[in-house]
Length: 151
Length: 138
Image: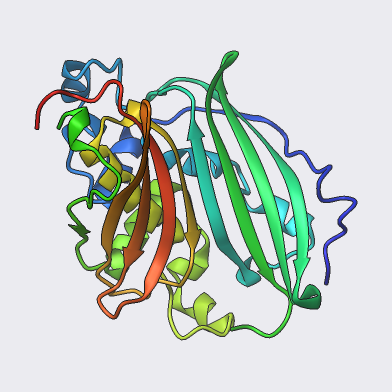
């Protein structure tokens, strides 16, 4: 199945408001081997001048997954989750954000590109993270869909 | 570390990551909200034609972020980008490496990669960090 390119770039996911909970950030630090205490100990974070536990750089991607069905947009594009790979990921950081701050994530599909005669499709999703009107981060994901035989 | 200590060609001290176990993948799935079963459920991986589960690309990217925040305070990281070049098998022991490739006024660009002991590059990317607020110690 190939993606309807006309439907792709216009596809905007419903914005969501999320918070990074302290407990989740502690679990993330533990799972990633992060031993810097500012990421797990509120006193250490405050001593370093932070109002709460900082949201670490790549956790913004995790915030994109705080949805009842975080991969629904892949299904909405007619894709099988078992045939997609994360091809590229980038972040621009505009300001730090912290545990328990309500953040708004607005994602849209910005590009769908067919490669190798349709055997591969590259879907680019961009997510703006804001706190009120303040820009916090911009995340860009390129998802690779394997339409042909599995590697 | 002072600004004068950062120059194009500077190699950062590599960061060797502990072996990535199945338990690590389960913990990361929960902590990162990425519950895609292909990383944690062997049956699903096999149904998809794979021999085994494999490591979340975002776990390797999180290691690179950790590598950066070990070097500069997080607020100085302006951007980071990676390409997921190869799958990381469960049981792998990756190494993060970085090299300053440009210093331009108040920022430095660092090439980053994650490699496996067999030489495979699993992630390659770059980051831009601010130098201006660099701490005058270390």
